[in-house]
Every structure is written in C-alpha cells, then in structure tokens.
Image 1 (cartoon, rainbow, N blue to C red):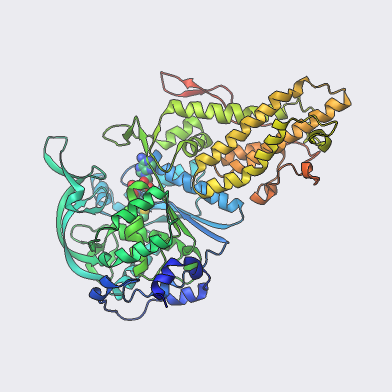
Image 2: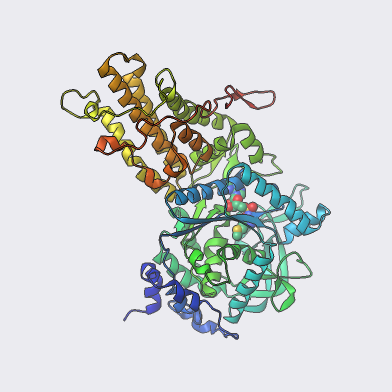
Length: 612
Ligand code: MSP
C-alpha cells in the first residue's frame, strides 16, 4: 500500500468527503506536552511525526455553502493608501459575487496593530498605543464604508477575542513540541517585521550618507538582532509544504507565485523566531506562560484569519475549511510558507487558496511617503466616485504584474466605459423619445427568427444574443479566478456590441405609426433592455451602486438580482419574461456622470452632469 500520509496530502478531494464533526473532534488539542522527535521528522516522507496526519485526513469539505474570503489586516502605522484599498476591493468583489451565487459568505478585513513599528509610531505620536491604533483603525473603517467594502467581520489584533485565539494557537504548537526556547541572531527588518538571511540583504546608504543594510526584497532598512526567544520548527515543514503544494497546484494563484513558492522550498528552511523579548516589545500578546516574551507579530497577525472563523471554539472548521486569502505579493512568504506551516503544525488545514495580486505604482515607482507619490484613496473616491475608483482598480489591476496609477487614465477609462458606453446605452434605450410608455416593451420572436420570412434580425444580431447568453458563465469564471479585469472587459465588449446593435437598426428612425416598425422597435428595445439587465446583474460585484441605479431604472426588484435570475431573453426561447410590459423604474438622471479633463488649477476633474 502506498504511504497513507502522501496519499492523504495529495487527495484533498478524498479528504474533503470526511465529516466536519470528525474534523472538530480531531482538533481538540491533546492534553500535556508532546515531545517532538526532530531527527525523525526531518527524514519523514509525509508529515512530521506528531503532526498527526489524521488532521490532514479530516479536511472537511468546502460544503458548497460556505465561503470565507479575507484581506490582509492592515498596519496602522500609516494612513490607508490605494494599494490597501485594492486588496479590499478585490476581496469585496469576490464576496459579493459569492453572495449573488447563494453562498453564505464571510468577508473579513481589519487592522494589524501589534509590533515594534506600531509601538514606535504611537510613541512618536505621544499616544497610548491602543488609542493610536483605534484612531488609524477607524480611518481604515471609514475608507471601507466610503468605498462600499461590504466586510462582515472587522478584526483588530488588539481585540481580546483575538488574543485568546493567539494564546490557544501558541499553546497547541507548544504542546506538540514545535516551539522551543532558543536564540536568534541575524538580520531583522522592522518595517516588514521580517527576518532575513545574509543573502537577502544588501549594502546601501541612508539619506545622511551613512552605511546601512537593506532588505533586497523591500528596500527597507535591516538591523542585526541577537535575542533569546522562542523558535518554531519551520525546518521540519519543508517537505509537508511541498507535498501540500504539489497536491494542490491551484493553492497559490496566479501560477507564477505558486512557482516562486515551490522555488523557495527547494532550499532548507531555517527555524523561525516567533517571539521577542518583552523588554523590547511590549505592544503585543505575551507568550502564554512566559510574560517576559511577546508573540512574533506575524504569528499574531496570521491567526486573525482563524479568530474570525471562530477559533478555538467548536464550529470554526465550517468557515476555516472554506478560507481563501487575498494578499499582495510582498507578503507571500508569510502566507504561503509560515502560515501553512503553523497551521499544519497545529493540525489545521492550510487555506484553500492564496490569491496574490501585484502592486500599484505611481510614475512607475513604488508608492512611498519619502517619494511623495502615495495615492490617497479617500481623496480619489471623492473625485471619481466610489464606483469610479472601484471600477478603475478592478478594470486595470492585473494580478500578475504591477499597474501604474494615473488620474488621466482613470478619467479616460471611466468616461469611455461607464459614462459613454454603458450610460449612453441605458440612456438611449430608456429615453422617453424612444420609449414613451416607459415600459419593458414586448418581444416578437418571429422578427428574430433566422432564415424564414418576416425576420428583421441580422446574423450580427444573433451573434450578440449568443454572446450575451454566454456572458454570465464567462464573467463568473473570471470573478471566481479574481480576474475582475477580464470580467469587466467581457461585459464591456458586450456593451459595445449592444451599442452597435442599436446603432445598426437606428430605432429612432422607425415609424411608430406602422405596425411592423412598431413591433420591430419594441423588439429592439426589449433585446437592448435584456442586455442591460444582464450587464447590471453582472456588474453588481464590481460597481454595486451603479449596478443598482441601472437595475432600478429597468424596474428590476431586489429579489430579481441573484445569479440564478440571469436568464437572458427568455422570450427568444419561447419562455415568459417577467419584465415584459412592466413599467420601468424612475429616471434618476445619468448612470455615471462624465468627467471633464483635469482642471490644471486644482487637478480636480469637473463633472458635467450631476446625478439627479
Ligand atoms: N499587516 C500586514 C499583513 C498581515 S496579514 C496577516 C501587512 N500590512 S500592510 O498594510 O503593509 O499591507 C496590506 C496589504 O496592502 C498587503 O496585501 C499589501 O500587499 C497591500 N499593498 C501595500 N502596498 C501596495 C501597493 N502599492 N499596491 C497594491 N497593494 C499593496 O502587510
């Protein structure tokens, strides 16, 4: 028989069939410390000794009902910037999509408040750390409310409930013999709260010309650190991590980041320091049983995902087994190496997927306070509108490579796609001049029939219908893969086709007094409104307010907006259309106001048309 451990790791689908109850039982930590045979572990083919392969065998099914999406929790040593909002909008879009699909979706975000740099930021602001953190945490919250980030859970690492989860998680790792008292000597970056090997640092000069060492990865200054603290046996997890990744090629997306992690795992992993001396770091969770030490801020921070899932209480498995993380590329190592190792160590399954996005730059440069190119999302959403900014980020943000932010580009994209193309289409098809009855007009199937006499539709028209009919599947696939830019591109393509359809048949030239023309006019409008209804439904995850305006204008009620309501043009398939003959909703003005070129005086784009 093949090695059962390997079999189980590779076969998550088999694993997934086992019951949640069993999972819950298996995760009750065993009483008393369990010593770890490290020598045995390092040569073990599957899971390290005592890591209980049983745990892996009890990964509960992602039950087709629950979905749990997370953003990273944000450091509170600086104000929110565009990159932070991008992580949040990306996750929000997927959360909204899942809700429309009928999932019970949990969406967590929050703030990462412990650690040396926060402690120092509070000190230099002359504030008590908790008061300091609360101020900045509230700023993040306000930004998220302003940008319609529909989180269900907002976690702060200073929350007592989180502290309890960290303490329990630590105790479980310790009881399994995975944490030992040792000493760390090496480079440390306070900005990244990260340990670095000599090959990860380089010489540099600081602003005053002094020789310093910096992290090759982030460019942040590093310092030599020598400290007695607790170490986690990360070295024992190289093989288990490789086994997890090889058995789950979709675990880290996009593929290039998956390959990066595999590459890192080709080399031995050093054990990881997971605490700091309390004398240096007071602002954090004390190590259980040793108040002279504070838990390493990344271990503390990563556990936030479990806290939100309900850990350590019974029932957390339900959410934890459906966990998906959205992260920026700079924090991949923490999420794809440390975190799964901690989880495997604690007998918990790694997250389902880690979805990585690249960064926003400005003028081709990383955003930074010292360069002075940090983009303020509060200001931008004020200028371009909440949906304007959301649309731009999702439309232009590509997970694989960095994207450059530029106001002029925002203006161009929004005017072309939201104001002119989509807004123009809605305006044309609902304008009283063309639709005096202000109703969803009737559809005449014969006029769309191919070949036979009486049909007035062209092959291009039928191609439009085909494209829109297939659109929900395409868009859903892209949302699911966190490729919102592709989803929006696909919708935009169909909007263009629909505008072409209207233009081609110039319904404003038809004679209402002529029975044939009137029926054709109604049919054209019916098709165009069905297209618009579909676009409105599909755009809800990305631009909820704009989609709502559009759907309200069409008279689509709140109970008619789920993914299952996406039945495009049922009349063409001989089925009834619930909207046919129904009154349109009230005219609330333009869908998305056109933005005028930036005013060079105050760099504020002018809005030509105001929402009613
Ligand atoms: N606190 C840690 C995360 C802990 S999660 C357990 C952290 N915080 S952060 O505030 O520095 O970054 C939060 C997120 O913002 C990360 O996903 C990061 O990649 C993202 N961004 C920071 N700058 C960015 C850009 N310029 N562009 C896009 N996202 C970027 O790391």
